Amino acid sequence: MANALIALDHVTRTFQVKRQTIKAVDDLSLAINAGEIVCLVGESGCGKTTTGKMIAGVLPVSSGEILFRGEEISNLRGDAHKKFRLGVQMIHQDPYASLNPVRTVFDTIAAPLRHHHYTQTETATRKRVRELLELVDLTPPDDLLDKYPHQLSGGQRQRVSIARALTVNPAFIVADEAVSMVDVSIRISLLNTLSKLKTAMGLSVLFITHDLALAKYFAWEGRIGVMYLGRLVEIAPSRQLVEHPQHPYTQVLLSAIPEANPDVTRKKSRIELRSMDVPSLMRLPSGCAFHPRCPQFIGEICERVRPELTQANGARVACHLVEEKVTRGA
Ligand code: SF4
Image (cartoon, rainbow, N blue to C red; front, side, top):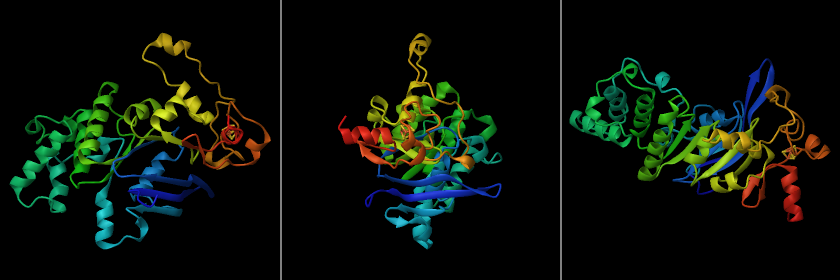
């Protein structure tokens, strides 16, 4: 954790809802290295977006620490704080809402370049804007410079958002459901652009999605973390998590991914949950929060004792059954 670019150390974030305190993120520890891709997946309400916002400094933590290059982010002041704010950029789900409708593409990208003095002259600004548009595969750039957000497709708007995030040479990108609002046909090409940028610029990416199929595609060389009701329940290198999922919830998510061929999907054995109802964060089940739905529920221990993340066959998993298997050497 000491050398990580971003490290979360026992981070919890609570909110007050109807006079009750709920934990949107509960005791999350996670380290992400320079150049690494980590995907966080899980159903809505699992805490993945709240995690992304805390990392980007948009939301403060309720307890625990987030370190950027070893420095606790809430302690940063002056230049160090500015370096953090520029170093960690967020790409949002809805590019239409995050772009100013009365600014052209050129103005949107030129504004941070001028504001942070990355370019000194108008000629240098125009040159850099064109370079950034080419980097995000918006070509030829001259065709787009004078367009407004409403004149662009959803995919083009998201590429402009990415180009704007890159103006300040970030080291870390939080991409929150960044491709879920664009047409399915464009998602893969956007992910390929993000992948290319990650390699070319040595970026670290935290990719947040509810879609495990997308996480698989984008983070095949990285890690996937699965969250459930505010807690990380399994994290492993992507290939391992997909081929040898250990937590029952991860197994359920993987069994629910549809295949391109509908015949294969129909024949695919799907793991049935004990209950289809997702518990509310306001009435969290005791012990393991997944126990009312878990198809592999092993009894009282699941109801009474909350499982902690422990090392299991190269992954970290929070499940009594997995712990038991590791102890037995099974
Ligand atoms: Fe299922 Fe028990 Fe493991 Fe929770 S701890 S995932 S209920 S087996």
